[in-house]
Length: 322
Image (cartoon, rainbow, N blue to C red; front, side):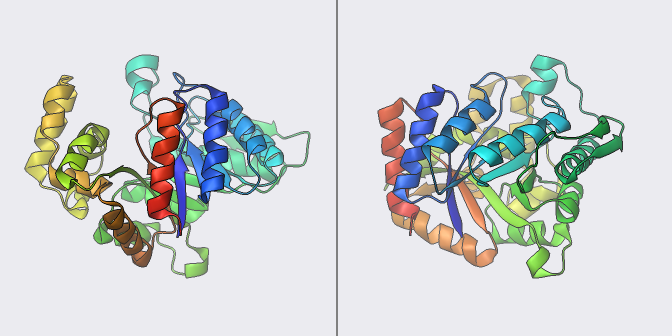
C-alpha cells in the first residue's frame, strides 16, 4: 500500500515545495494538495514541487471543474505531467463547501457534471474533445502539444459517484476506515476484474499521541464536516455510526454553531474517519487497511509554521514509512 501525505497551501508556495522535497527524503510515495480559491494556487505549487522532487508522485485531492473548465484542467494536467516527467495525478471532485455559500455556484447534478468533465479531459488527452453537456461543452478542444499519460482519480462517497469512478477513472479518493466501508467502495465501483479496478485511495487525518483520548480530542474539529456533512444516509451504518448522533451533528453544523458541533463529534466518528493514538496503533491500522483492499492512504497531520510542519511530517514518516 502506498503511503502519501498532504501538503497544505495555506503557506508560501516555496515552503510547500520544501515540504514536498522533505516528504521525498523521508520515503513517502507521494504528496497531494487541495485546490481552494482562498489558498495559494495549486498548479503553481505543484509545478514548484515537481522541480523540487524527482521520485514521488503528486496530485490534486481534489480540483473542481466548476473553478477550472475541464479543457483547462486537461492542459494544466498535461503541463504538470511534463514538468514532473509523468508523476502527476489529476484528482477531480464536484466542489467544496464554499461554492454555494461564498461563490454563488450552484451544482445541481454533481454526477452529471463530473462525468462530463472526465469525458472532456479524456478527449483532450486523446487529441480532441467534442462534448455537448448540460454543464460543460467543448467543440474541437485540443492541445497544441503532445500530452503525457495522466491518471484521473475521482472523489466519491455515494454509490452513483463510485459507480462512475468504476467506469471512467483510474482511482477513487474517498473517506471511511471501516472494513465494511472498503468493501462497499469496491462493490459499488462494480468492476469484476481485479486488474481493471481503480485504485482505492483513502484520505484521513492522523494524530500521533500515546494518550488516545487526547489524540481524539485534537481530531474532533478536523472531522466535523466529514461526519456531519451531506452524504447518503445508507453510509451512516456503513461507517459504523449512530444515525441519531449524526443527525444532531448535522443540525449543529447547519446552524453555524461550530463550537456546539465539535462537542457532538463522538469517539466513533473520529475513529470512522481518522486515526488517533500511538505510532504503533497507527502502523497496525494501516496494515489492516492494506489487507482490506486499500491501495493508498493520503495522510494529513497538523500544520503550523515550516519547522513545526516539518517535524510533524518527520514524526509521521517514522510511524508509517516502511
